[in-house]
Amino acid sequence: MTPYSTPATLAPPVLRIRALRCEYPGEAGPVHALRGIDLDVPRSSFIAIMGPSGSGKTTLLHCAAGLQRPTSGAVELDGQDLSGLDQTQLARLRRRRVGFVFQSFNLLPALSAVDNVELPLRLDARRTDPARTNGLLTRVGLGNRGGHRPHQLSGGQKQRVAVARALITEPDIVFADEPTGALDIRSAREVLRLMRELADNGQTIIMVTHDPVAASYSDLVLFLADGRIVDHLPRPGAQQVAGRMAVLVESAEQAANEAAVN
Image (tube, rainbow, N blue to C red; front, top):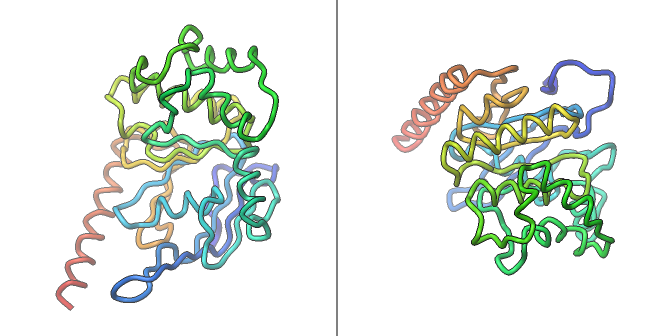
């Protein structure tokens, strides 16, 4: 299968995935979460991943980010083969070269916004730079909130702190798992506009989402079904994304009903 990628570029992909498979035991036999994924992600691209429940979205994200080992296949981050790394090396790679943004923010309640942003550096025993931290908070629109703790911030502000934290190590790539799922519409749009701006300025982002509007901020939407990439949509519009998702969900429900009958 030809790997899916954003529009052609002469630069090598920052993320290369080949023949990625992931299986785990289930009550009725092995569950095939991923069934041979091929994917190239160029630098400075913003990729959205969508699909029905159980299609393999989160598994793909976790394998690509080094959070989960696949059953077989290859994941290369900027030429580094993740399969050759032990758990300590993977943890170091995640701390230094990968950023994460989660639906639940994952901020430490006892720490200020500044301390939450700097946490990845401190965990890696690296020096912090107050000017850089404040610059990142200003970049995400929170230059005057550095001393605030999470309970003093709105949901959208918490997520922007999480984005700043993801950027503090200057990562090769940022993985976002439903980053707007816990936000109201206005806050979600603010976070999505920020992520779009980051991609326009050179940051690579891969985002799992169920929201067609969120996906419309990306350069390319990849649609997963039954562990495979089954469709893609460049320069997506929200209505186009919603239409294709409706077809995939209907197909998934039909397949589930047929399996139940048999």
